[in-house]
Image (tube, rainbow, N blue to C red; front, top):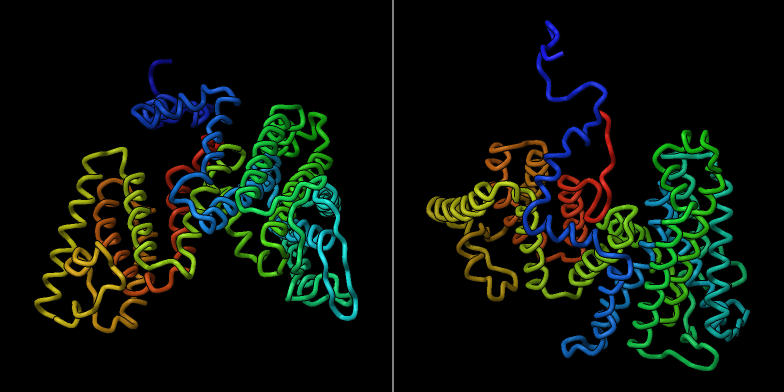
Length: 490
């Protein structure tokens, strides 16, 4: 029929037509341009071609600006979190299970290696074991795999929030075990296990940061290859099917409960591998290394990279861990400032990139808005611009003449922080030119809060930045940078 049914208004959505299919032309249109061209080229690369992009990482330790400390703080931690994200991606991305106790496997792997390859004395007990690394790492991986098997078996009938509660209890049980419940001195309580042996394979010892970096890089490459092969196998396809609809997968003959247990066990084994190498690299295993903040970082890597994507785990680890290390408590405020404004500009770009007119208008209007507000406040309330810039560096003059710096911000900065949160929520909800209207004061308010409140607390600020970054990514790409968009029925 070419005519519409009487009484029913015209609608672009057809009954029984999938929304993603209906908007396929629009999705193809969005993939045009440089970004779309790069994305298509990347998708056309064979797996070996994608893996080849990790080859330059071998040369990182030889770069002149990469010191021993930078290689440890950035190179080693990025690779360790990449391993952890790959393991968690098996559980969350492949099997679709919410595991909030994943960091406990990381800790069990570290403590297992520390106990089997080190000397420890506590409460009258002396433990001295010096296993070679190949046996200690293998034991740590197997222990974590068995623990994952146990956790998966005991919670095989749980899904969603119920599974999250059980796994969270498992993670907290690990915290209690390592800190308090230590009657035989095995974990040495809150002091942890020190004097851990370096990695020694058949008489060959790795005792340099470069050696650990290359060993971890090799582990990441091996795990990537193994997970890719599993992902493309029958087991990988069954994981993804059970992730989308466990009931439908079970009706088609897939052993959903067994698949869940396998995912828990494999993810735990990879976390145990990362934990054992981590304990050897820092010559110890301590409870504070396996806190809830670590779990948040791992999930941030997985969410940013895109659940189910192996490439996304590497890119997410680089982005999240590098920025996390830059914003630690010892970083200069100016370094944190540059990263903050770069993230702010990137967020605006990805929010407005579909309309260059709105993008240019947003930046220009924000600059003009700041100059006008600064001039007005300086004329009517001089104390509102009497403050000093905190370690501004080359940005000192720009900040002083654009951002409001009260002599004693106090509660004013806190009120600005609360108002900024409200404005960010409004920006996310609005669309079109209304979003642009609210975005301009929001950007300026964000700069005000940063300069008067957050720049002096980089350790706290990094979590604010991570939250803002993840909100922006989830708004623009709910599936993450490299994740696959789910099909939704209109």
